Length: 217
Image 1 (cartoon, rainbow, N blue to C red):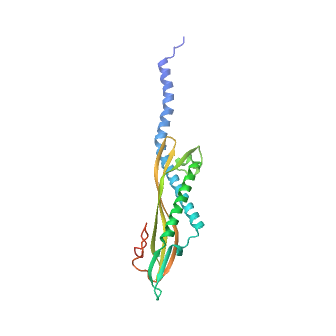
Image 2: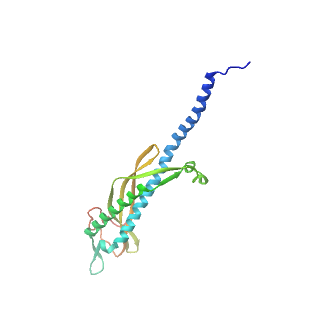
Image 3: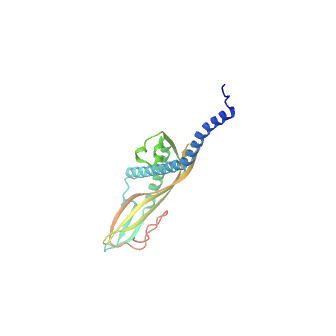
């Protein structure tokens, strides 16, 4: 009177019910993981860049460094610039101090709790803050490379702006669940500048770790 259920058919139904969610999860993971990692990488670079800028601003402010402390300008009797000389000792002290401060600031981001709401993957602004947060870990890799550079720019009639800035290069490791990778962080932070009135000579004294000169752009 009653039909006996087919155990193979029942087993196939169970396997199908299990396989479909697993396939959807695998597809979602396959599609979403690269997008999530790229989002985490961009966030990590931004956080590291902000940390570098904070460190430089703090160190320069604490040191009370001004342009005249780093560059000595010599003029002739007519007020024409004949020589620009760098205070290499002061510049070296500034560069070394900033490097240590930046390294300390980058080490602090290890302990920051950084999360990306899963809703940001939708690309829809209204959903950006919805859903569970995916935790990101950021770890500095190696040491920070610092170069002290400068540039000249026309600032008006018979006026030249001389800017001194620091260029930083470092790497951070970005870690999300089941994926990690390294990303380079490169940024430039201005230290000080001055407007030079009068003709600037075509050749200048060279800094030991950069070039002071190259003409007016």
